[in-house]
Length: 335
Image (cartoon, rainbow, N blue to C red; front, side, top):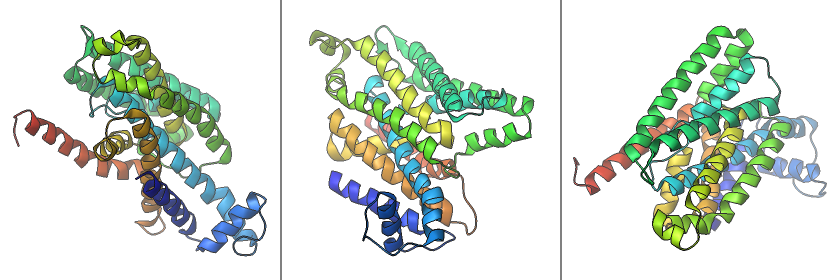
């Protein structure tokens, strides 16, 4: 399964690099990649226009889609682990919108640097996550109804905050905030890719290290505590990890919903609940999903670049609905 996922990621990245207004062959892609890495004798001979297009526009965009997809999927897997429910996801409980509000506030008040915006997005996502977590916890357990209702409230508040930032900001700020609301990978640059890779990679590494503790947490808080897991410390630390992964992802591409819901849930059905394997497979699946979604966003409408957040919501919305119906049927509710 992991090998198939890796093949899908590589194939999706290759096709995404080939397709566009300037037609590029796979041999040209491999040649440009080899020359950029200092490897000679691979692929087609050098062509200045093709190499420039690939290295300045398409390669950064492909790399950003792979990284953001992986981060959002792992963040969703971690949230589902600490809340003990497959309905938990950064977008559903307001983490993504909180991060976007933080980034929008930074843009409106003049912090136009990438690192400043990323920091503001992390702060907004962390604040939203802590509010949802503190509200949903009661008597040592997480109330899922409260979790979802709090997520709705946080999303509504963040939406109002985004509207306020658009009202008080100038024309340039409004355009950038609209970008957050729709989500897009257009304009990705290598400096941004580096920030996402370093910060997101560190967070994913920590999440993988915590995988065995998430397995114990699935047995119940009391059982996990008896075998040495510091439950609340694990949850609070995981909340920070989720905020970091989500914040650094949306800081440069805007709100992309439902990746963290769909991918971990499908992986769990296919490979089981062991969290270290689950998170690795989720990272691969999220990367594959987003690079394919970005390819569709660039090609479905000729000469247009559709908002990628819209496409992921079109897929994730029905999936979320089907997940709720399935849960209701298992609980003896309406079919």
